[in-house]
Image (tube, rainbow, N blue to C red; front, side, top):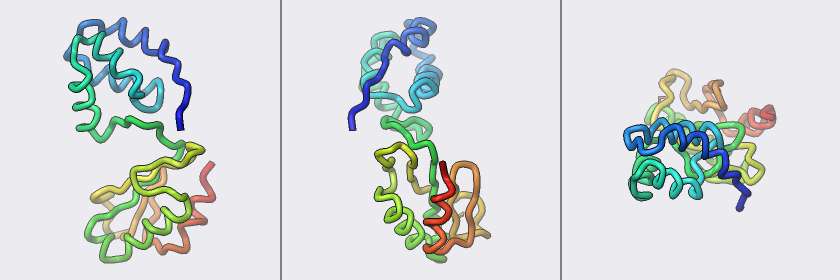
Amino acid sequence: MSRAIDLSKLDPILTRHEGQKEALISVLQEVQGEFGYVPEEAIERIADALKLFPSQIYGVVTFYAQFYLTPRGRNSIRACRGTACHVRGARSVLRAVEQTLGIKEGETTDDLKFSLETVACLGTCFLAPVMMVNRRYYGKLVPHRVENILKQCD
Ligand code: FES
């Protein structure tokens, strides 16, 4: 889905950091703060302003899990795929999320309501299998609870 992006929002950020290669991470954080992700259309402009190659920007954006190249949903779902969760049925929980939302891990729904990702461990193995929706943990999950949990999100 293509969305119109107002690239003029980049101007104040890039003006503040003109020529500052070392400011790349903060620039990317600011850009993501403005747009909710780092639009591909912005990368060339960032590269020009910081005197870097676009490939260097892509390298950083794809290396750090905190940066996204596509828009994120308003609600972030993080389903655990760690060992403790795996042995207690995490895969069927993930499948239930994917079926309910019609997306796969790493994707965002077209209405930008949900983004789904999996993580190696949420640090609450005693709740396995567990997923987080925004800041809230849902533990000892079974697939049939998933739809109800997701219905509560705005
Ligand atoms: S393995 Fe799932 S929370 Fe640790």
